[in-house]
Image (cartoon, rainbow, N blue to C red; front, side, top):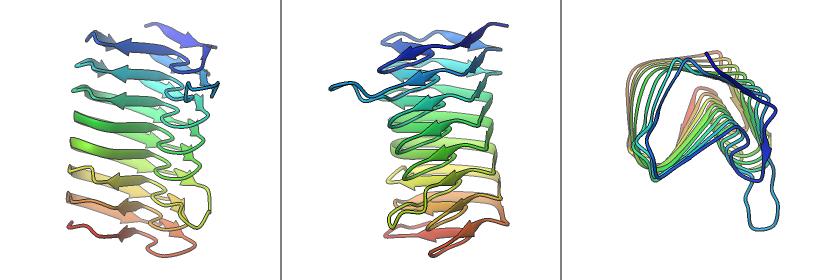
Length: 212
């Protein structure tokens, strides 16, 4: 497979996909960075998707950084599929250390989110807007900062309309919702939440203004 490493840009440090829908298989995307510069936001340290129906399969996305959102994978206004993807040890300044999804319809199967960090929401992943269908997720060892509004060490589901099944969520940490923070309607099936920590409320899960 192909390795993409050492990339540096104000958006999309490693790979940028916009308005097209390639199939990416068996890639390693590691050690890339997106930095904030002027009006460019510093999003998508590893992979940046916008307006795309791409299929990402068999990818390892690790050790990437983003000054703002989506250090591993950043997705906006897209309809992608993520299958057997691992996002690990990525660090975002604000939202979605491993994965950031906004206003998209996303299918996810066998996703591993491990050891990622976000400064604010969603150490493992932040999902906001659109709809995410996911099955077979392992979310472990992800964190956020410990600020007053920090939440969702493993997953932050913000008005996401997410339907997630067969989840293993363990050893994540945040101020609120160490494992999962739900801020919009979500459906969770066959979820096991264990050994997650919160310094504020909801070690396993915190639900605010939502139906789960």
